[in-house]
Length: 377
Image (cartoon, rainbow, N blue to C red; front, side):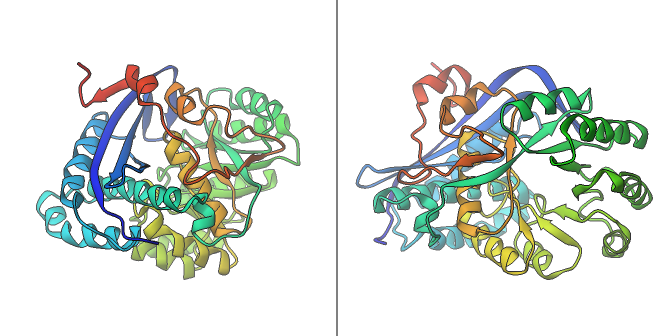
């Protein structure tokens, strides 16, 4: 790989209206934001990334401006690899993070930049990104339908099953009575062969998590995701892992050494880092492969736009193993303008793009109707 010399690093924020709100235990999505990052090198080649920006309501515009500002620090420099750029900018911003307290937004902006660096590097080598990361050729990866609301979820899930999905994740944390009602209804509607999982988004106490895990055990859930706060006492997590009949999943709100510890600990058996929240490819590839080597499932978390989905897909393909890709099935016009018909679902799997880089070139003109930053003329 030759040196990478970014001539420009740009960021764009978008907000896509949605017809129906998407409910999770801690809040409600009323639009679908995403932030794209574009790196152009001195030869004119471009690479694309995406930074996580779902919350708070002003998150997208803030992350985009932050990514553009960080990009100015990288412009005109030379890096031997995307990982070198990731390490350099992470170290350089440590004091800024302490000064502002914005560890999350800074990490998310760096993640978007890192993804764009890797996309650029793979394009220049003429390889699909997962192959440049050293993986064997892969035709497809398994997916699971995500973001399923607590309002009559069996109807939504059954419709997705008819479209080709075979695995499903329900949002819980709305009271055990409703949660159990929904899980039972989904199992009945989808049949015993369907993969069924649940995500509590950190909202349960230890007692509540134990109760729902035991009550839902007969429904054969593959995992219970983020049942406790990620900062809950480690003793609570260990007690839950030891007593729960359903294996635990998590990782989207962990980073760096926390993720490394989760690989070797016996608490989480499904690891779900988010490539756009922290680390990009540079931070997560080794963790993904270590997870698989440890006999656990690596199932990257993703709930964003089209670049985030493709980057997570390439990371999963590079990691190998038996993990599934999180696949948002809610309408999202901005995501579809990027993905198009690239990822049709068939028998619970989607194709792995085989063109260079991530496999797409976003059409900024088509997306412009949703752009909120930089302001449209």
